[in-house]
Length: 264
Image (cartoon, rainbow, N blue to C red; front, side):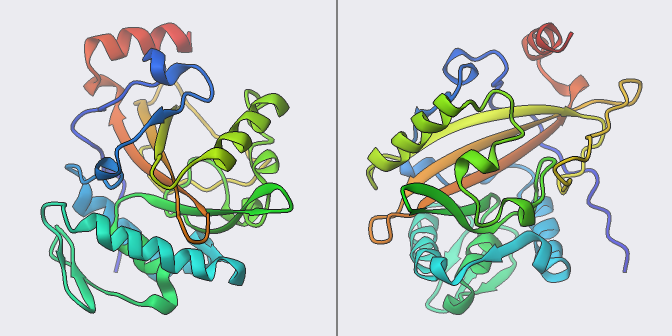
């Protein structure tokens, strides 16, 4: 059976991190209310269908977890279930959850990270402090933006962001300090953006692979709303990535003008 997931895009971009001052400067971290941690937007059905397909057919590529992260994964699932109680369209029972797209997900505590990702639209990464650095010990990453999970797995933040020119050693220390000082009741978020000539959400690339971009083709803006939450028991940092994709032509006038200014 052939699946076509190439045209999943939002009806608008809720944030424009290339020009909004509270998002533009690095690290661009802002406070987040826990009630806004889990988002449901107009492409929930399409993104979840794509994620379900990837979790069923490419599980070893999109989900990796170390045994060290098992307790954090179960704590994450517990927090996701609690957060879903107040979100329209979810129906939570003792052993199952009915999503807004009417898909029923079995609650499997032995596969807690997979279950959590099967419930929400965002990708989920688990980071734990090991030898004074936060390490990526687990991730359900269905929609990578030009990186490969296997290359980042079990690596510290500094190594994960090594290809990112703006992520300097000083910035890495600042981010690590923010994580260490975070409280479980002090969620945060930031955003980043990229321009693609392909709207596909699943775009893994090896470290040295160049992302192609043919400017004569239709251009798509990809924005990630990245959330950070600290779990109280395991002290794990949960890095959530909610991805939005929109054709350039569908941006607002101010979004087009400011994006053109920074990409010329």
